[in-house]
Length: 394
Image (cartoon, rainbow, N blue to C red; front, side, top):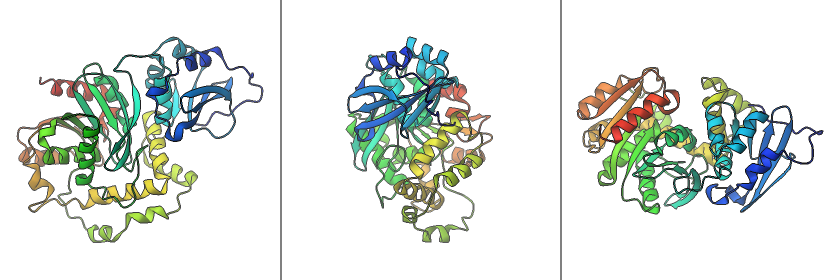
């Protein structure tokens, strides 16, 4: 998604459609890191303007310096967004609105939607034992906490929030070290530590218990939380969860010797890093895949984000499978009702893991979908219908 360049001939007065959005601005539902942000609003073929946020104030200016986020659409789409209180997210889901920096971009849509009810989409920052954690939430009802995978962010659960918010209070978090959350240097970044952060977050939100939905590494964290605090976990939904390797880990001695803190001094030029990541990620030039790459890069290009990524990846690989404290030994003790969703085309978590889980947890439910590693994005409709059925007890 190319950046929108400001055109010198663009009129000084911003279009009425953009002015209408800013008239609805509600600072209480957007989290602006540092209290300042410049969000570029581009109209294809016409030009671009910057919505400048300073604390609880917003104003439109001519596009100038590098923005913190960008939203780009044609004039007709912007008119529909301005006239329809929920038009922004609908346009984004249909691919009519391109967004770079989903935290600020979707936050801007939420803050200018005009929706004022208690269950509206909102972004928050909450203190925990691991520092501030960034959240997006919507809906009312029993709480559902969503935990993303390695290199991901809370944005990977925006479709889940949309699908479940009519019945549940859905909360998606940025794990410490990722997205907009604090990135503590030297933290363990293992499943036990992350699970403690989950419970700390529930405490801060005043929640005694919640359903947990986890994808990939987030699934492993959800399982750990279910084993360590089953009284606080209602049900578990595990989307292609990262599980301890059962085959030989021949690189384990090397991986143990590597220090994640090297990410603090590693050179990572954006142009080179972005080129590599977009080639590696299928469809990384468009749609959700492109947005996911942007989210990954925003964290990875910070030294503390790289260190967190390497530490988390290291711990996934080194997760001990056997022995008294081994993952597969302990998994048999998992008591919350669990739904496992497997992708038949998943290149990271082989579907062959299912039979091993079934031996440990004969009562767990399983669904196989014709998708890859991120079911909530790749097979959204089926994934969310199965989640709703499971959570409702059907």
